Image (cartoon, rainbow, N blue to C red):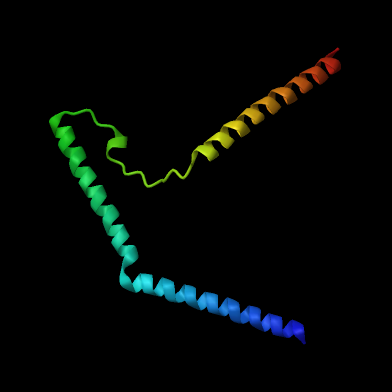
Length: 111
């Protein structure tokens, strides 16, 4: 009997979560938030194209990085960069050690 109650609670909980998710996505669609973001990207792109064309007409050196808007964000901190350096160092040391062990085994096989 207890198991049926838990399943009913689970089903109700999942239904509520799905319904709330549907409402949020519906409100986002109706409010035009997604289209607004797409329009802003288009405006940035057309502005970048105009700058590119004017720079070409003026004879300036053009680089792709000057006209493309990067949307990637760097979430790294000094802690993550430090741990990344440590893990890369450990990786290099292990790789050299394993390669050395296989060279030793290889010399036994070839002799």
